[in-house]
Amino acid sequence: KAIHQDGALPQARIGSRVDPPVKKKKKKNGSNNADEQSSTKNGAVGEIEKLKGDILENGKSPMAIVSGLFTMADDISKHKGRKVVAVTTEEEGSIHGSFGKMGKVKVSFENGVSAEVGSRVKM
Image (cartoon, rainbow, N blue to C red; front, side, top):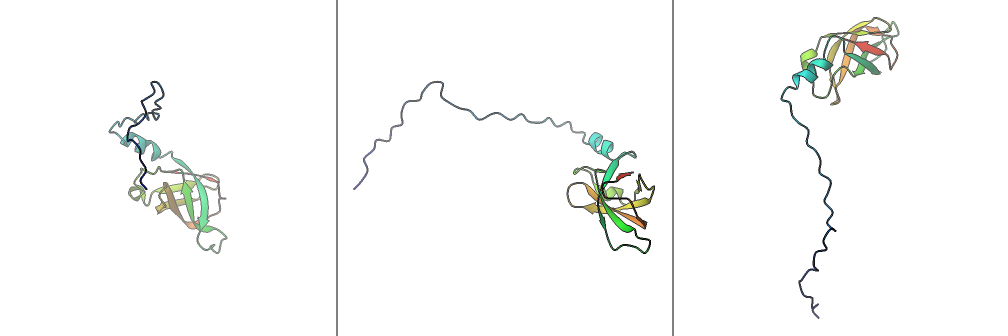
């Protein structure tokens, strides 16, 4: 048994069409260096997210994961070895490399870091 239907569609109703909202495209300025320079200035401030590694004899952690110093777009490999200072304890470390894809970095402290998680760090 076959279904008998005519292939005609109903007439269009005027004013009933719903268009999806139009998304505005962001303008590309071509100079992303301004954003990169602003996030990697000497005054960049980040925050200790985690303390990593085995505790040293002095009770301090040798490595910290720091977020907020860089953006996702920054090339962190260019900043390896750069000095970083924990604001509260004035302990000095250096950038060891990137950690993940969200602009976090591993910072190694030669003598360890006693700053708490959530403490500020500056370049």
